[in-house]
Length: 353
Ligand code: KG4
Ligand code: ZN
Image (cartoon, rainbow, N blue to C red):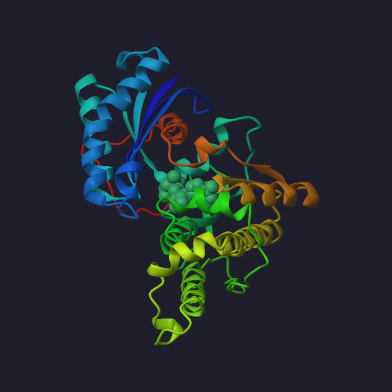
């Protein structure tokens, strides 16, 4: 059974053909990073406009590289939330129009559910139940997954998502958008123990909080910039860090800041996942979402798996970040259960799994 998946939830236009929920036949992602990079983050209006331009070429390429025509599909699946409403509207409207014109079944998939199901697109595949950490630019949650549609959210971020913290710290350091890949690389050359940024463990809770570490980085930068501006008037906290960034970057300190910040985020993600494994008594973990592309998180989770006799499932980097194969993978289960969407499908910016 071939399902065409479509995801336009954020800033990537993605389409993919997946067989039986597990085998990727084609997987196309058109990134908008170049458009948003100069603004230091995603500009929703520009994202929607770009999706409109790219949706047909991306879907066409996904079908062509799969070597099939629309008639060969069993269904079309689309991500209907959570995400940027203007972006989601493009994918949903497009999918509805295709289904209507070709009389094809329509399936609606939650983006986070898609991330969870990305674990099934490669071997070895996890068995239920498993603990699932979804860490991306918009979400950071820990789930217990007992089967299709049997999800229990154990905890979620109370403020910034892990990827959002990477993006904000990257902006503070003048390293551009997205922050994850560049901080990941710089961190590998820095000392993670150089600066003791605060870790928010929120005792007795699986919830996360990453806004404090971002503020701690800001205060640290102000202090450092203040020291470098010695002799100038004013308190360190009033010092303009932007004008001192070039100085900080060439000093090599930026690598230590990146490594120390990263250690802080990864420590919390790993410790909370370990705790969920113990508390739920489940020795199987899947990782997904853009932050799962992080080399240190992958290394630490693999290590935890080896040392603690826990099975760890981490998709390839291209399946951790946003893609439509994960939407088609989850859609397979909806389709089999006869859970189809109607032409009245409307996307939702806020849509818990
Ligand atoms: O899942 P995703 O592609 O889109 C969302 O649904 O948000 O995740 C994007 C996020 C961005 O915040 C980006 O900075 C982060 O994932 N990211 C990383 C890495 N690669 C991407 N964070 C840490 N390390 C990375 N290597
Ligand atoms: Zn995502």
